[in-house]
Image 1: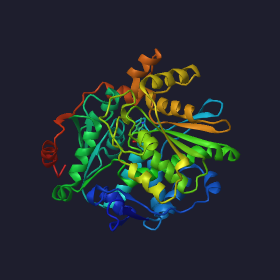
Image 2: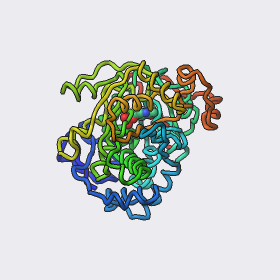
Image 3: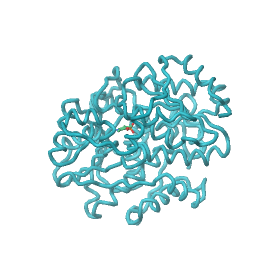
Image 4: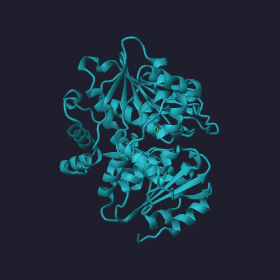
Length: 428
Ligand SMILES: *Cc1c(COP(=O)(O)O)cnc(C)c1O
């Protein structure tokens, strides 16, 4: 697999190099310029692990053996992604049955596998920003792995307490840092780290954000899994609605389309942090200050993966009419949760944003699939307040809820972060 730096076209890397480096020169993202066309009918007849192995093999089989790839997929995808019927022709693709109850488990766990292949035996420090769910998925995927230090930055007070407890209680090789700022500031700090050549090399720093191509390729696989659950003759009518923050999930869906997955179109749904919907409508990229919402994992106004979406459009791989961008406000998000509950489906704010966007966009004859990106229990308080019904905690959440948070606090200041990184025990 050949990837180019979208800012510095002369920088070209292989899949494993892109996994190892994360971000290219001038903070450019790595992305392929060509995609193989897959035999999707045959693929959709296979079970998840076999199918995903074949998809990955078609993408980077020139760099790893089929046995290696199968083993990576097997270790990463240990839980299902069922399509849950909500009403006639509307389904939720439930991506929250992994160990940390969010879709980030697919990418986080697969990245851990890919990084092990890319790094060989070297020590590595993973520095990542989380808007809520990446932190837990990445922390769990690398917890107690020898030679790996993980530093997780998150916006203090801006993620749900259960989201926080899922990673801040682990300790050992997981350092969690509450930043006095919003997610965009956390993400900017991570990017600044990558500008420090000496530091990056000394600590062998990597990022586990959706900057890393391995996460996106893992996510491609569940779009296939969704369509495999739709009768063959209806697949071409499917519209996916994706609750979007950093636009990694949307990028993965568009990659699936580039590979030939025969669905109709995608709706990118944001909350009131609507940089992309405004850009889509008005043609101007004008991020505003990030606002806190119920769907906190999407409180992002400078989405990192957008240049990849632009690349797919500019290269003519994806057509403009195959993507729509819709913003959903807070009242509508709550309304979506209540409407879903009235149909017997308890959901949470992120999925509800996608559901409302889907309802606005869906035409007759189409099948709508919105992505359930997190388990409702991760947002227990909000969900109970809005729906007025009690939410039971799955055992992983009940367990970490009772444990103390081990987070450190830092200002949104690079010097402070640099000091913390320098103090990490390199031999731990
Ligand atoms: C991360 C996250 C999103 C946003 O996904 P992107 O790939 O960043 O667009 C949506 N919902 C939940 C629950 C998340 O954790």
